[in-house]
Length: 422
Ligand code: LLP
Image (cartoon, rainbow, N blue to C red; front, side, top):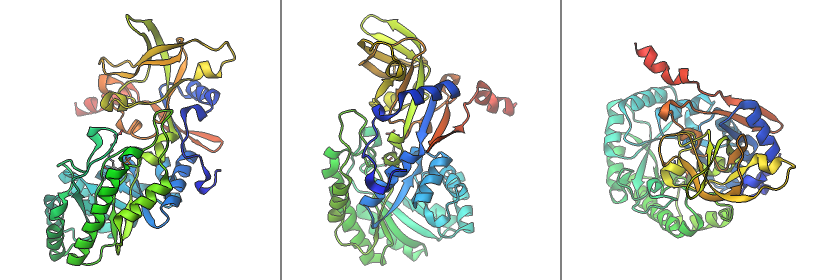
């Protein structure tokens, strides 16, 4: 077991044992998600030791696997949940309400009903509301518990416009209205405990200036809010810590990020809370996929694989870069293969179903196993059944042991709801 903060700041795809991964694909089939729980723990410890005085919550939308929740709970993380379903997973993992923040975004009635019931059993649960409507819908249901207000700070950052939330009108109450909204909530009997904002996801080193401005705004707002409604328990500045996806990208310097955040927030009479998702799980996971087709097309060589945009959506949705490695070529004793530009594409009937275009990789052969790196965050979570394609299996590596963490879906699973409706 690696000690606290001493683990490497990034695990590259080249650091994984090619032969071991290939044998997992052999044993459990392909496509297959592999998650190394020890690496999740290491990531948590590095981040938590850079922020010793902050509350660290895990945004479980990045990877809600029970094994991840159990490991991070054991390390001391709280849990940030985006839906009633995630809150249920959090509580079922053994967390108590005091460890759980539910961030409501245009919450369906069914979610609010469930949350208010859960709160009645555990009054320490915190609900973060992003609109006055959510607050009054909570009041309608008799909720007068711990309330945090999500604000829209007007500053966004992140790896793609689709994940920049800080200035997107959809999220939060405009920061300049926060004091009024919280005065009303206090008068209505809510227990106002915090303010929250999330600037966006995948904030890289070159966006840290924008992030610092955002944190400074949260500090100013916290001071205004506590002058108006009394001391806050916490100021939650969200997640967003970027990780390197490209082989030559450097990891964030956590100590300096933490230092800059404390400087920016200024003196506040409240705890600082952060809620990263990607940071803990991204480089702890890989996706294994088998090559079934090698085709010379007009201008490129197409390597067809059995995983697609239904298995890992990020490249299709955000044009996201994921490292790719041919495990069979790397683990064999045969001569080094020639490197040629390849387009790695999945089995889905859409031209966007490609993991990379014209990337230099060892010449592919049918039956080779590829590993797609940094697949631990927003990989399985965003998998779907488009084209009636069952979702893949997952395994967890935990020290020397391997366990199946999700069985592979079958076409029967995909059609079950339709059969049951008859
Ligand atoms: N807190 C809130 C309120 C969030 O909405 C999010 C992410 C997080 C925390 C965690 O952000 P992280 O530390 O993981 O960056 N599917 C996209 C990412 C969407 C993130 C949505 N919200 C992707 O694959 O890049």
